[in-house]
Length: 219
Image 1 (tube, helix red, strand yellow):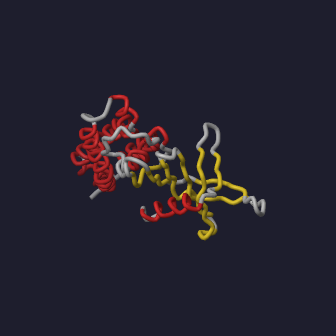
Image 2 (cartoon, helix red, strand yellow; image 1 turned 30 degrees about the vertical axis):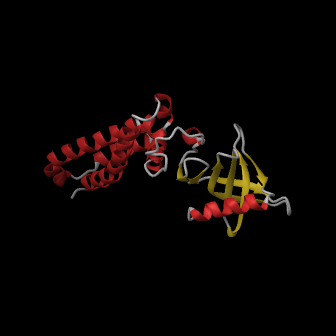
Image 3 (cartoon, one colour; image 1 turned 45 degrees about the vertical axis):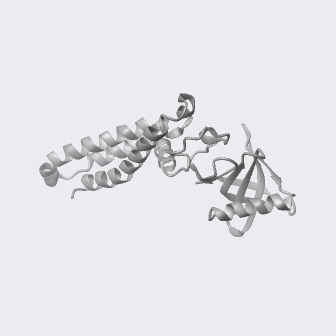
């Protein structure tokens, strides 16, 4: 198998599954959601980027198969280069679509009061949602630099998850020191337009509830 054909097969397997999952989801939820809600879903607005890529893969596969004899003589991997260029141009959309295909909101038909896609950061997905009170979001490449009030030292933390309590209208953030995985915090989370802010949870029952909820999600 040529390098081009191997690349095409791998990407058809990977992105073809994502496209099928998203296409089925659109068909499943569209009859039950308002047009306004449907357009908020990130995968709905970005799905055509993936559809075009699948078409490009199929065209490249067809042309590559026809010219396999000449490629065997002269080599080359022009299709891989062209396809990679397309993915690079739409890299954010590809990353988000793959996250959307694994998101708990993908096939959800509830018009909920959570932040939904409007509050979704890049490279994030809802890992767990009870559709009424709590949802938990996992993030990739979400880091913070915070100063310890006790010693005045700044440290970098990765965000393990954020949790939204729809009933209490509160959000929480769970962070872990990049260089010390024993250094973890659960804080109130206040997303802002220009910057986010955080606060200490002083209610022990509330803190324990957040911990139990996160443990149930196998965080």
